[in-house]
Length: 349
Image 1 (cartoon, rainbow, N blue to C red):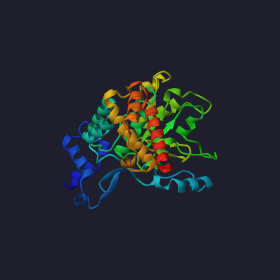
Image 2: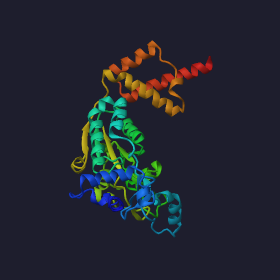
Image 3: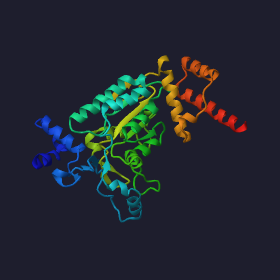
Image 4: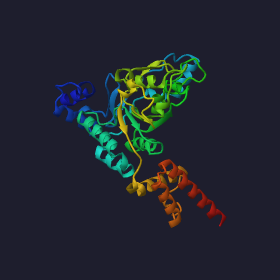
């Protein structure tokens, strides 16, 4: 049993080997999710490439040290990003693909095909001995206000990976994505590292919004920079010019959003899984309103049940706007405005 379990610790390197048998894969997955202290005498281990287990959950050490740590900036950055020097959780291993699919469909039934592909991908990765959440790069194209951004955010929340969003429409945004080199007062790591620090996971979802509006400038080309992060070999040892060290951002899930396919360069199109989505249909109206109310309540920091009850007149106005093609974003704005006015009326009376 000990020999088999020690061999299972090498699952990261051998899971792509054609002789890596199904029984060995099953044992690796079992090792990741079960209590194996009786076999190894510890619940913590780490492979040379940084993958490991801590308290029976997968982890990844994204970097080992911060470069030029003795300089003034180096000392400041070492202190600021100290948590990144420790193994970070690879989130999502405890949520089954079917649970994820069910939760997302309850909120975004009009994204059924996209949700199904994500669930299938997670299931396939589990079969291959990689139980944490990670999906291939996605490009989701749909009309403004159809729920693309909210979907990406909820995917990060439900999966447990966390998420961070960046809009790349503008000439200076490439520096936010690629990071700013050491030596500048505004120096900062590349955006996926910032996302990792924010989420405290090694596999957050990074959302790149308005990717079709990114254009080359003196500050670089956001689409070209994104391609570097989407290339597995490059991403696994990306040299960060702020931290002056290689970081492993290879487990990040990338979701690019666009209102149109126009402006997306062929190299990026060839590197992503392209999905065209539409807005919700008539039968989705109750789901949309329910989810919008919950989001507003969370934003206000209150329980959804204490929100004012919509009367027939308000309900008719919202439903009519929805049927006339109002986007989810416009519906949310209208619903929030009504809730706010009702709250003011309560205070006045």
